Length: 288
Image (cartoon, rainbow, N blue to C red):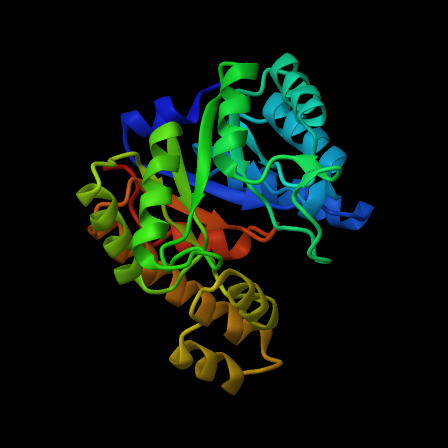
């Protein structure tokens, strides 16, 4: 399969993010979405990894299946907090043996009870440590996460950008947490450039088809949820068709502005559905 870093070097990319379903019906719906989105010729897809590895086996099995059955590569998210080195090496070796060539290396969330992130509960605290382990274990292309509005645990902007630049320099590319103001992404890229970092960073775009969930995740990740969008969605609460229309409209405009600003591609949070993504992609041009 293809190394995503090589694909990025060739031009604009299109990618989708999915999560491992926990029911048979959810799995059926996901595979239907994968089939429908294949017609859009994605460059790759990524599959999330539950907090503390709660979906470890689901993520692994789904990534391997997609990578072997679809025309595009699948990239697993992998977190390190709460895991031992041996656990991560075993998983990485399994991915390597299955032909997986791309890994999204993440620190992950600290334990909710405030217990230490190293020692008995794991050997790692930072994504940079996981990147080093991934490099040691196989010839993977490595992606990392970026937060245009700053990481929620960063003490200040300067520290955040310095750590992000250092992390991106170790990796092959980045993917952002979702955000809504294109100016935040542009400012992040400019600040990284000032630090000498030109590693490509794909913007993550979320169509807000489930406002309650989107607002909850935004609060968790320190992303500003626009008041105007909140008001528009609240005015049509219960009207799923109208909410979908607004979600597609806003996300499409964001994608167009990002491409105009020089983004190397678009990474859509598909939410295991295809309708919003298909409608958005009908309005933007990724062939340049």
